[in-house]
Length: 430
Image 1 (cartoon, rainbow, N blue to C red):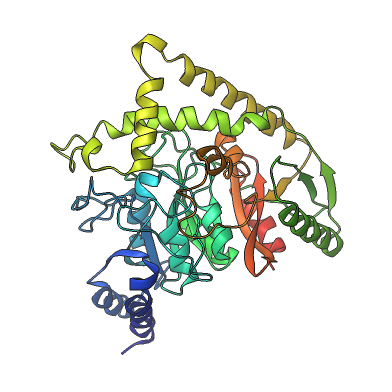
Image 2 (image 1 turned 90 degrees about the vertical axis):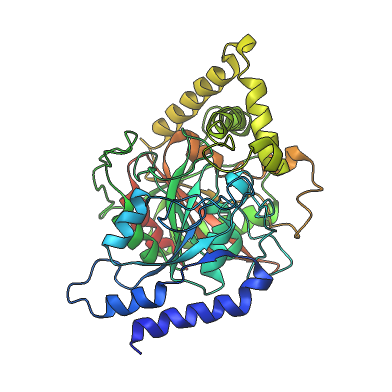
């Protein structure tokens, strides 16, 4: 047995041992050992040769069930590969299976899967964060090398923070979304999660790029920050727990001392409207997206089989987009989104990156999310939503612990400056 097959077998053993309790994998690739053996015999190796990847269950992988953790698509077998999956395969990565998520990516805790909540591998009594709960948990539990997730308003970065790993949301348009079953077409991006910035960067470099199948993709230049002092913008978000802000401030101070960076406190217009702007967009676009799940061609009737949070967002979008409103609420939200994006563009003229907490608080106990006021649950994305509205790139890095619980530090760079973001992130890594 070769080294690669041995590694894959170890991951399969961990999945077999821990998955029943943690509830991370929905489907395991039954052919992965044969695929690993075939890779061992290749003379020419791709950029991700032998990298074992877990895939969020809203990204199509040909021949595998891609059900978005929903009873609506419970038995849907993807007939094709998403562009990012094609690129991973071409780079000789191994896909170990499909991991759970909040149903249709509607949620931020990992509690909304139709197949049960996911536990945080580090602290099983706590939520792992969502909606890419399975992606972050699979990496943290030692079930794969890296994972793919999708990020609408923090769905990669929040679970990365809670599970103590690295998670990147690329710039809007940097990575093809062809083959993604999206929650919100104007916000979603596919991105990588891993234990290190280097691992995340290797995956991003493979999956990024213009795709003829996705007209939203953009050819961004490979900008970087070479030499000179870094100018770091610090943003204060209302509602961040003092213990979290104190830890982030201390981390920033340590980085400034280590690298000689300069810090500038900045304000961004309309940032306090980010959450209120985000949800009308998500509701409206998710309602539109659910129209294809009619029970005739794809899955079962949505209104009969979808869970509570997915239905809430679908019905909310149905209400917002009624003909009598002539799209005014959606259009108003798009207008504020443009204001926020312009404010970020202005801010990045004066700083190289922006730093803030990934999450405003610590993850709650499993089951508590369903008892919390909806406003509190939605406000938990206040630190991550702005990057999606602005279209800029962002990454969550481990920043330490509070009361034994991982806390994430979030970096943002201007739209298209993904490589610069990763370069800075490597200098910030613990």
